[in-house]
Length: 406
Image (cartoon, rainbow, N blue to C red; front, top):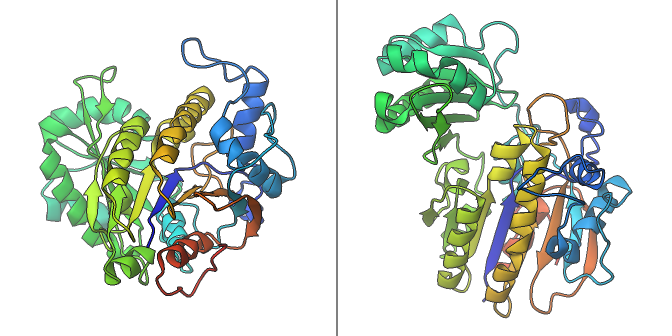
């Protein structure tokens, strides 16, 4: 028996989605546009990074070739390696959303074939009836925000009034999500989590995918800062995922980062929390040392999306990619005979695109292991092929929605 390691670079799309026009994202390309900006000097930031995008390890695993499969062209300014060391391809999403749960569930073998509920983009996001129910059930004096917003901007706008009044800051985005920001000490972290549980129950009839707790600290708009105590309250996947199937088969699933929340803590043997990509990598390296034969280590690297994609920060996104790439050698040295590592993403979040929301894109699929060889796996018709590849590798029965590329 061997082990499997699944790394999701949250929002690291590679363009080319066949249905991007349906989402208003025709031409969006997270990797391609970051590389283009870097090559043109538009992603230089003093003290952070400069020059063309440098991802030698992922390039050697076939990242640039996967991007060419998806869009027809190599990313600008990035040297194409002469030799590759893994299986490489791109995957199209069949789920109806371009959100975190849809992407992760499909990666784990369960595409989302139903329609999520969403909140209005004009006027108040939340109805008077819903607001009244939240205030009554959660015993809060009212809410602030009640709109589509960027998380950091709405905290700066409403944070001081939140501290004065005790009213939580409630907002949404183009995703199926209800987000609640509250101060960790003035409002209380446990109280915020309890509020989210209450709202989760109230939103179930509306089929809203997630309620997200967004705790922050600081005493003024200039000092407010979100903390690492975010918590996602998700609905359950519509059928057993790869994670459930592995646990049922007696294997252990080590969920690093926000994976446990995304799967509503179903099919998870162990939860390992960490805040920030480098801390997530440190935690993952420790878990690799501890994982046994037949185990899955599943990590979400959230900074790409949360800190850089949504904030449309091209230099920051590029620097985060380069920092992640530089540490892949540490991962490689810990892989044993028979181990399989897959790098992928759950959607796009092109930092050069209009607005601040996710973008509909294909994602890279890069697989590496001792003796695995190098070849293209082409463009996969669903992210579910990733989960079914891991199922085949770990020797459990195949699921219904994908096909292994091994």
